[in-house]
Amino acid sequence: MLINRNTKIIGQRAILVPYKVEHVLKYHNWMQSEELQRVTASIPLTLEEEYEMQKSWMIDQNKCTFIILDKEKFENSRNEIESMIGDTNLFFANADDRLCAEAEIMIAETWARGRKCGSEATCLMLLYGIEILGVRQFIVKIADDNGVSIHMFASFGFTEISRSSAFKEITFSKIVDEGWVTWLKNNVGHYEMIIDDTDDPE
Image (cartoon, rainbow, N blue to C red; front, top):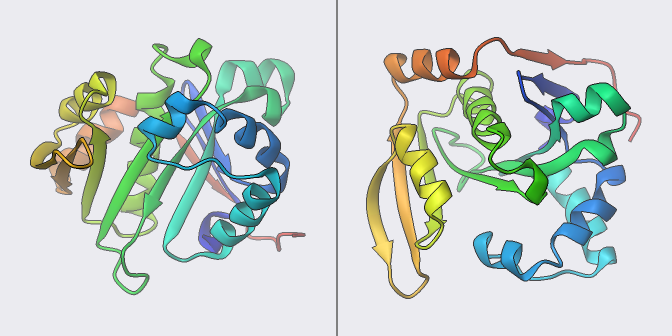
């Protein structure tokens, strides 16, 4: 999505940056994992296909993607590639109606799991969707054996609305209201959304 191509969101534990060409190789290596393919309902792509996917996602008005960096690692290394730990996405069924978005979160690096980076990154993405894109309802679809994600989204106030035995997934929903926005902000603490209005060289 072009709207977020120059946006950086800085939290306490995580930093969200746009998915760019330089991130593709590491992302591609992550997605060779059968576990990640299963939990994200993804099929493996060739490296060339992954580069094409990054280009298409950058301009697709129905998809908003951020790469998640571990903030501590980035502040020590100043290297985005070394600091990459996962990604978070919003999908819109209709570019002309962004009131409802499907949210996704993936922490690919096993060393980064259990450190609350994923939950903070999710909060930051939800707040971006609300404050910048005007989302009023979020949907998440989670594999029925992914207890960690189910617990996290339930703790965020999402409620189950359907189950699919065929796809082995559960769909949860959350309507945005003022009280929930306040909860998200309190939960994430201080954060910054930095938007560089200069033209992207790409």
